[in-house]
Length: 254
Image (tube, rainbow, N blue to C red; front, side, top):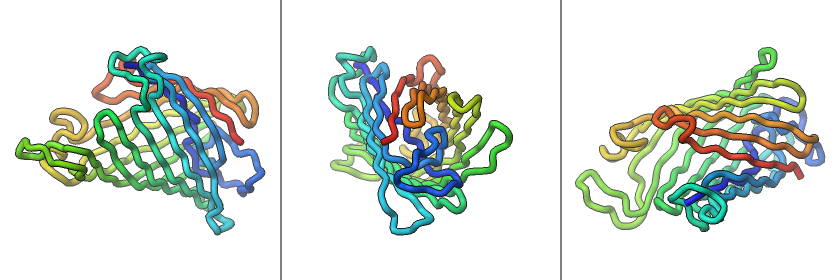
């Protein structure tokens, strides 16, 4: 099975500049809210991302909904043995940002159709002042895992959907600006279980792994103010870089 990640890189929140619907936003800013479409290719298939801004009713805030469909045509276009041609997972985010202080908040929902498991989380993101070409955007939040036919502590299957436990996430988005067209990102995230069944608390991130450090690296090139291409690599402390997920995505700001 193969999986292509056709993604509109929309990891956004808003910089400290004023926001207007007809403004072109800085697509390199991890806190930039803009309507967008994107597509990407990975070894697991094609990914598609759609992002739509909306009126929050407050002139000092901005909001955006983002929907990602992942892994389409994975068997045909990808090269992972486990991939199929159906969409294997979805991600939905509702993102808001306060334009006066560079603080964002996000509801993040993920669901995997193959495992029938997912998560929902709420987090805050804060833009810090840039130090030369480097700027950090720390993040912190909590969430809950859910799944269908989850195995309980007694080894029996719990029929239907249930919530085996909760977790916390702490990390940062990092940006290194090379010039006005090229930038790099490194986004480490540490997740740990908080509560739930013993099975979940002890094995949520693999056998005997109650926490995990996840890494994301991205290299981006801006063709023009509305269009860019990005390379992403995702791996964890339990997965080698070469065995992680790699994808190329093209993003267009509408």
